[in-house]
Image 1 (tube, one colour):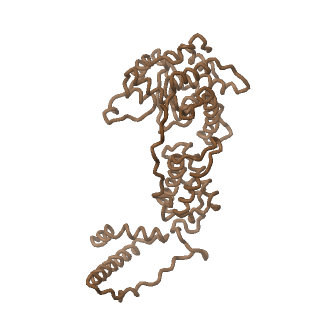
Image 2 (tube, rainbow, N blue to C red):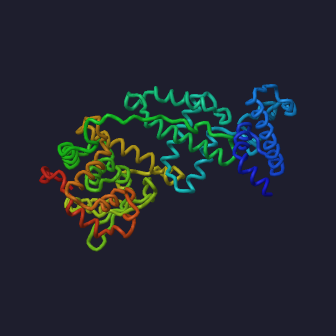
Image 3 (cartoon, one colour):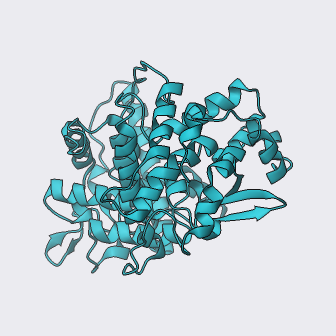
Length: 417
């Protein structure tokens, strides 16, 4: 047993690579005998190499003892890339991403991640012209990467960014193929090791809104008159910019708020950002007190008078998956909010929805408030182990927010509830 354990430590990784490459799975007894043969072959190779160092390059007289390798065949076809767990099964790219999702969903991954990975896998299948996961090679992934980098985004009219290809496409493929390898459906991950080295992007301005840009959006939100848009889309344009300005939250977290996500506690109005309402990065709920100015503007009054459920979107009740019921409508609201903000911030160097998140940090730092409280409000992880000690209470957050600068004050007299 000690001998086999030593052989496993020394030669096991090499054996695994070769077996995986050839799509083979062996039982315990066969593996033990294989390790013994590998050890014997390595000793023989060492002797041959030692002989060569002395100038003797005659062929190995025992090399002929190894038979010619012929890959196993299945139903008349080579089993390249197929192990015993997938024998007799149809291993498609589509089935891999769905199998990955069943496990990922149980561990708390978001529906938006599933949607992103599914889109990438669908594009890969279309690019390759087939859906057979066993036929995908590293060279295929490289070709797909190059294709994506040259593809034009129909929404922007510009090439897909290298960051999107790296962090979305390649990351998704690595995760899905990695799951397949872990579950013995594929012998190797064709996307492993393939990446893009990103250069540091040029920065010509701050990522956050300027005072003038923020005031323009907030003034427009306050003065907005409803047109042909739905009542909830109108409400989103009216309130979500203000909510983002005073919480630094992701726009989706505010756009998916429900009536029950606002409550009053000890005289403080408190928002709950929760994955029960939709998608929240990291899947962690958090509570945010309302800035006093939001209360003055009448946001609690708006919420209390609204019907039950989501404030700014209508979930797709025909969708059986609770997360998917919100995801599609939420994306629509985010798109409308982006179009709305872009009218007043035409500079493409700032993201019209995410600019609030950067601006919140800038203003918070300007007035010297506690950074740990800021991170808690925005849903950012603690920066040090020490920061994880103790709680950031609602009282502490409310006290800090009371010192946070009021926004859009030049148009205060024009506010409409």
